Image (cartoon, rainbow, N blue to C red; front, side, top):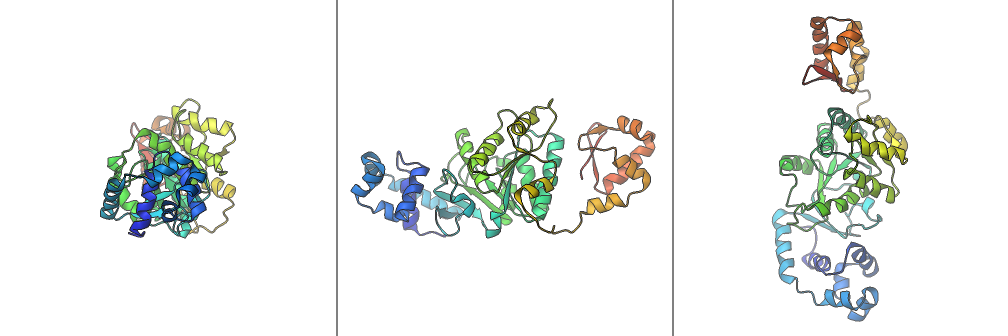
Length: 366
């Protein structure tokens, strides 16, 4: 464990004190310098800062047994613990409103993770949304940005997975205790993320994934990042809460435009109406963030391949969009008969330029 038991016991005691929330704890840490100093302060000093009732609650805490159980869980799971203001506490979080007073971490937070971008969205993405997220996360990771998301099924998971495939760093922020992975089907993904980034939570070990935990989780996602990308989101999507937190934190919000007829685009289109930055590729994000770097891979292999396509393959490829198109429509638009078209489409798929979807539909992926 990276923290002394005295310090850990003191911060846990504060966290378990009735009436003492994260804002007040952070204020106390700024005033006293450490959890231990707060716990050992005179009653009069605490009462002056917090009032008689909370001061009494701190000094008469009867949560010692529970604290011992929590510490045992932390040690058993080999969690790292960082208190606000500690060396190793993520710098991007230090000054956000309602900064978490404590973070439990598996993996590593590195200095390079200060250059991070949040990518979040609906749990029920469209095929187009998934592909866009894969490309965006992969390309931003290639530019050295850490991708932050919330481990949820859907856009979040796609962003984490695409980043790992691109050999990038990614951080997952949980809405549960670090020892209570949610959703359960992402346990394997968590193991991979820990090896190439971190999984973090402000919630005590054993905390279940209750619905009211997630809005707070979202402020950490945006807080860790230089800005937040919302790929797809319904009218009441939790991703919109991340966007709101980013706005409050003074960070840019990016939204991907979508068809007005799809439910997944109602939230993102609404963000655009309110002034979010419209993006269609990674360059839009990088430009707004003022990041001018040389890509780790000098030229995308996919675009190199496109430049060298034969006339027939290029003709078909240029008819494909990021929205699925049926083979009958492709045949009509290109003039190729179905057998010839299938042969061309197979070649394009083998070159990793397109993807075949169920129902004889095709979509470009670069």
